[in-house]
Length: 184
Image 1 (cartoon, rainbow, N blue to C red):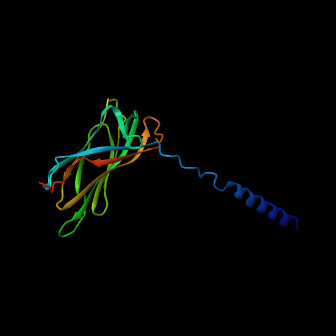
Image 2: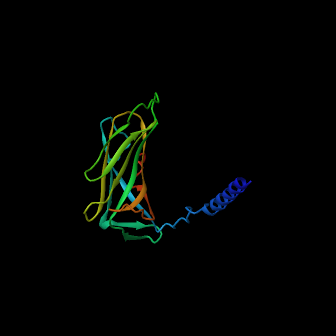
Image 3: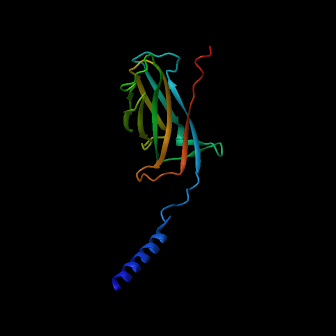
């Protein structure tokens, strides 16, 4: 009977200790400190391209001052790295066959990158920004290697402090600074 009591006592202790462990690692989400927005250009930007053409996504943030949409002012945000994804999606082709990369990415020096293809899309996952310069700049090339109608997107997934990789509690949204090519 003594061993039954010991087992019951141990089960009781285990259940009490488990109860005190619940939700220990769940914390409150920190509020977003800054919501930044920057424009990206596509060069050359035109309605029709041919296989072999190279498009460049260009981003320049002078003085490392990002536009905070909450205050509508530029804020010095030095010594950070940006992790972004450039993506090309096949929207239409006849026949609709996507069996490999749609573009070949051309990366500038000083960034970390990897590429992939999944279904009707090709993407580049890139990290840039931690370089000794006065501005944040990026010029990412995309050489078209397939025919079709494509959509291009560019978005940021993280902002981290250089050298220690701590997450900066801010977001960055990109907009394309282009006009409608269908209007003459």
